[in-house]
Length: 233
Image (cartoon, rainbow, N blue to C red; front, side, top):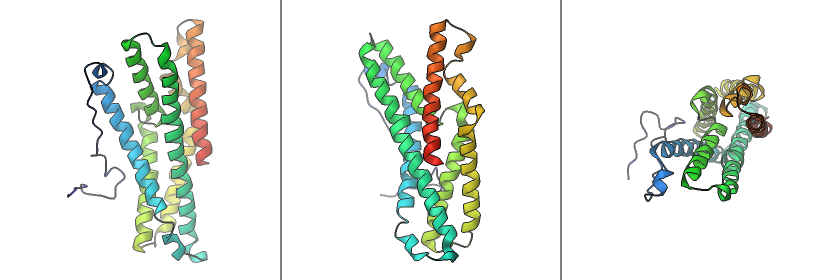
Protein backbone atom coordinates (compact mmCIF):
# COMPACT_ATOMS: atom_id res chain seq x y z
CA UNK A 1 0.00 0.00 0.00
CA UNK A 2 1.32 3.44 -0.93
CA UNK A 3 0.08 6.58 0.79
CA UNK A 4 0.94 10.00 -0.60
CA UNK A 5 1.27 12.65 2.13
CA UNK A 6 1.47 15.66 -0.16
CA UNK A 7 4.30 18.16 -0.35
CA UNK A 8 5.22 17.89 3.34
CA UNK A 9 4.56 14.63 5.14
CA UNK A 10 5.98 16.16 8.33
CA UNK A 11 3.39 18.95 8.47
CA UNK A 12 0.87 18.94 11.30
CA UNK A 13 -1.98 18.66 8.78
CA UNK A 14 -0.35 15.87 6.74
CA UNK A 15 -2.99 13.33 7.84
CA UNK A 16 -6.01 15.58 7.29
CA UNK A 17 -6.89 13.55 4.22
CA UNK A 18 -7.93 10.67 6.52
CA UNK A 19 -11.65 10.77 7.18
CA UNK A 20 -14.35 9.05 9.20
CA UNK A 21 -17.37 7.71 7.34
CA UNK A 22 -20.79 6.93 8.78
CA UNK A 23 -23.39 4.59 7.29
CA UNK A 24 -26.77 5.00 9.01
CA UNK A 25 -30.30 3.75 8.58
CA UNK A 26 -33.15 6.09 7.67
CA UNK A 27 -33.97 7.02 11.28
CA UNK A 28 -30.41 7.84 12.29
CA UNK A 29 -29.84 9.84 9.11
CA UNK A 30 -32.14 12.43 10.67
CA UNK A 31 -29.57 12.76 13.46
CA UNK A 32 -26.37 12.21 11.47
CA UNK A 33 -27.03 14.85 8.84
CA UNK A 34 -24.27 15.75 6.33
CA UNK A 35 -23.53 18.87 8.38
CA UNK A 36 -23.14 16.87 11.60
CA UNK A 37 -20.93 14.30 9.87
CA UNK A 38 -18.63 17.09 8.66
CA UNK A 39 -18.36 18.33 12.25
CA UNK A 40 -17.42 14.83 13.38
CA UNK A 41 -14.73 14.78 10.72
CA UNK A 42 -13.22 18.03 12.02
CA UNK A 43 -13.15 16.56 15.56
CA UNK A 44 -11.53 13.39 14.23
CA UNK A 45 -8.83 15.38 12.40
CA UNK A 46 -7.95 17.32 15.54
CA UNK A 47 -7.79 14.22 17.76
CA UNK A 48 -5.62 12.51 15.15
CA UNK A 49 -3.19 15.44 15.32
CA UNK A 50 -3.02 15.07 19.09
CA UNK A 51 -2.35 11.34 18.90
CA UNK A 52 0.31 11.84 16.25
CA UNK A 53 2.15 14.52 18.24
CA UNK A 54 1.83 12.60 21.51
CA UNK A 55 3.31 9.47 19.92
CA UNK A 56 6.04 11.60 18.36
CA UNK A 57 7.20 13.01 21.70
CA UNK A 58 6.92 9.57 23.33
CA UNK A 59 9.34 8.22 20.75
CA UNK A 60 12.04 10.58 22.06
CA UNK A 61 12.21 8.91 25.48
CA UNK A 62 15.24 6.79 24.54
CA UNK A 63 16.72 9.29 22.09
CA UNK A 64 17.07 12.07 24.65
CA UNK A 65 19.36 9.88 26.78
CA UNK A 66 22.08 10.54 24.22
CA UNK A 67 21.80 14.28 24.86
CA UNK A 68 23.11 14.83 28.38
CA UNK A 69 25.11 17.61 30.02
CA UNK A 70 24.80 21.39 30.03
CA UNK A 71 25.53 21.60 26.29
CA UNK A 72 22.25 19.83 25.55
CA UNK A 73 20.14 21.60 28.18
CA UNK A 74 17.85 23.26 25.57
CA UNK A 75 17.02 19.83 24.12
CA UNK A 76 15.99 18.44 27.48
CA UNK A 77 14.09 21.61 28.36
CA UNK A 78 12.11 21.55 25.13
CA UNK A 79 11.44 17.82 25.56
CA UNK A 80 10.00 18.35 29.05
CA UNK A 81 7.92 21.35 27.99
CA UNK A 82 6.64 19.63 24.85
CA UNK A 83 5.69 16.50 26.75
CA UNK A 84 3.82 18.49 29.38
CA UNK A 85 2.01 20.56 26.75
CA UNK A 86 0.80 17.71 24.54
CA UNK A 87 -0.07 15.42 27.46
CA UNK A 88 -2.09 18.19 29.09
CA UNK A 89 -3.86 19.08 25.85
CA UNK A 90 -4.59 15.41 25.16
CA UNK A 91 -6.07 14.81 28.62
CA UNK A 92 -8.23 17.91 28.29
CA UNK A 93 -9.45 16.92 24.82
CA UNK A 94 -10.37 13.36 25.79
CA UNK A 95 -11.63 13.84 29.35
CA UNK A 96 -13.25 17.27 29.18
CA UNK A 97 -13.94 18.39 25.61
CA UNK A 98 -15.21 14.99 24.44
CA UNK A 99 -15.79 12.91 27.58
CA UNK A 100 -17.55 15.45 29.80
CA UNK A 101 -19.70 16.73 26.92
CA UNK A 102 -20.78 13.24 25.90
CA UNK A 103 -21.57 12.17 29.47
CA UNK A 104 -23.75 15.25 29.86
CA UNK A 105 -25.57 14.45 26.61
CA UNK A 106 -26.16 10.84 27.69
CA UNK A 107 -27.66 12.03 30.99
CA UNK A 108 -30.06 14.27 29.10
CA UNK A 109 -31.30 11.56 26.72
CA UNK A 110 -33.90 10.17 29.14
CA UNK A 111 -35.66 13.53 29.20
CA UNK A 112 -35.93 13.80 25.42
CA UNK A 113 -39.45 13.19 24.18
CA UNK A 114 -38.94 12.52 20.48
CA UNK A 115 -36.41 12.09 17.68
CA UNK A 116 -36.39 15.82 16.97
CA UNK A 117 -35.26 16.61 20.51
CA UNK A 118 -32.64 13.87 20.25
CA UNK A 119 -31.32 15.34 17.00
CA UNK A 120 -31.15 18.83 18.49
CA UNK A 121 -29.48 17.59 21.67
CA UNK A 122 -26.97 15.54 19.71
CA UNK A 123 -26.18 18.46 17.41
CA UNK A 124 -25.66 20.75 20.40
CA UNK A 125 -23.33 18.21 21.99
CA UNK A 126 -21.23 17.99 18.83
CA UNK A 127 -21.08 21.79 18.64
CA UNK A 128 -19.96 21.95 22.27
CA UNK A 129 -17.18 19.44 21.64
CA UNK A 130 -15.98 21.53 18.71
CA UNK A 131 -16.23 24.68 20.83
CA UNK A 132 -14.14 23.14 23.61
CA UNK A 133 -11.56 22.00 21.05
CA UNK A 134 -11.40 25.48 19.47
CA UNK A 135 -12.74 24.22 16.14
CA UNK A 136 -15.55 26.72 15.55
CA UNK A 137 -15.10 29.42 12.93
CA UNK A 138 -14.77 32.24 15.50
CA UNK A 139 -11.91 30.33 17.19
CA UNK A 140 -9.60 30.02 14.19
CA UNK A 141 -6.81 32.09 15.73
CA UNK A 142 -6.62 29.87 18.79
CA UNK A 143 -6.75 26.75 16.61
CA UNK A 144 -3.87 28.21 14.59
CA UNK A 145 -1.79 28.75 17.75
CA UNK A 146 -2.37 25.13 18.79
CA UNK A 147 -1.43 23.83 15.32
CA UNK A 148 1.73 25.97 15.27
CA UNK A 149 2.78 24.67 18.68
CA UNK A 150 2.19 21.05 17.68
CA UNK A 151 4.17 21.66 14.48
CA UNK A 152 7.10 22.87 16.58
CA UNK A 153 6.97 19.61 18.57
CA UNK A 154 7.00 17.56 15.35
CA UNK A 155 9.94 19.60 14.04
CA UNK A 156 11.72 19.08 17.36
CA UNK A 157 11.37 15.28 17.27
CA UNK A 158 12.63 15.21 13.68
CA UNK A 159 15.67 17.34 14.55
CA UNK A 160 16.60 15.20 17.56
CA UNK A 161 16.31 11.93 15.66
CA UNK A 162 18.33 13.28 12.74
CA UNK A 163 21.02 14.72 15.02
CA UNK A 164 20.53 18.17 13.46
CA UNK A 165 20.07 20.10 16.70
CA UNK A 166 21.90 23.32 15.90
CA UNK A 167 18.78 25.48 16.07
CA UNK A 168 17.12 23.94 19.12
CA UNK A 169 17.43 27.19 21.08
CA UNK A 170 15.53 29.01 18.34
CA UNK A 171 12.87 26.31 18.36
CA UNK A 172 12.63 26.53 22.15
CA UNK A 173 12.11 30.28 21.89
CA UNK A 174 9.33 29.77 19.31
CA UNK A 175 7.68 27.17 21.54
CA UNK A 176 7.72 29.50 24.54
CA UNK A 177 6.27 32.33 22.45
CA UNK A 178 3.42 30.19 21.09
CA UNK A 179 2.53 28.64 24.43
CA UNK A 180 2.72 32.07 26.03
CA UNK A 181 0.09 33.34 23.58
CA UNK A 182 -2.13 30.29 24.23
CA UNK A 183 -1.97 30.81 27.99
CA UNK A 184 -2.71 34.53 27.56
CA UNK A 185 -5.81 33.74 25.49
CA UNK A 186 -7.04 31.24 28.06
CA UNK A 187 -6.70 33.89 30.79
CA UNK A 188 -8.13 36.74 28.73
CA UNK A 189 -11.44 38.57 28.83
CA UNK A 190 -11.78 38.07 25.07
CA UNK A 191 -12.46 34.40 25.78
CA UNK A 192 -15.38 35.49 27.98
CA UNK A 193 -16.80 37.45 25.04
CA UNK A 194 -16.60 34.31 22.88
CA UNK A 195 -18.39 32.35 25.61
CA UNK A 196 -21.15 34.98 25.59
CA UNK A 197 -21.49 34.31 21.86
CA UNK A 198 -21.62 30.56 22.31
CA UNK A 199 -24.17 30.64 25.14
CA UNK A 200 -26.55 32.90 23.26
CA UNK A 201 -25.80 36.30 24.86
CA UNK A 202 -28.36 35.66 27.57
CA UNK A 203 -28.20 39.10 29.19
CA UNK A 204 -29.59 40.86 26.14
CA UNK A 205 -32.93 39.13 26.00
CA UNK A 206 -35.23 36.35 27.15
CA UNK A 207 -36.79 35.74 30.52
CA UNK A 208 -34.96 35.37 33.82
CA UNK A 209 -34.85 31.58 33.58
CA UNK A 210 -33.24 31.74 30.13
CA UNK A 211 -30.62 34.27 31.27
CA UNK A 212 -29.69 32.18 34.31
CA UNK A 213 -29.30 29.17 32.04
CA UNK A 214 -26.90 31.06 29.80
CA UNK A 215 -24.90 32.41 32.72
CA UNK A 216 -24.63 28.83 33.97
CA UNK A 217 -23.44 27.66 30.56
CA UNK A 218 -20.70 30.30 30.56
CA UNK A 219 -19.63 29.25 34.05
CA UNK A 220 -19.30 25.63 32.93
CA UNK A 221 -17.23 26.62 29.89
CA UNK A 222 -15.02 28.87 32.03
CA UNK A 223 -14.32 25.91 34.32
CA UNK A 224 -13.45 23.76 31.31
CA UNK A 225 -10.96 26.28 29.95
CA UNK A 226 -9.54 26.72 33.45
CA UNK A 227 -8.86 22.98 33.48
CA UNK A 228 -6.93 23.34 30.23
CA UNK A 229 -5.08 26.35 31.65
CA UNK A 230 -4.06 24.31 34.70
CA UNK A 231 -2.92 21.44 32.48
CA UNK A 232 -0.68 23.72 30.39
CA UNK A 233 0.73 26.09 33.02
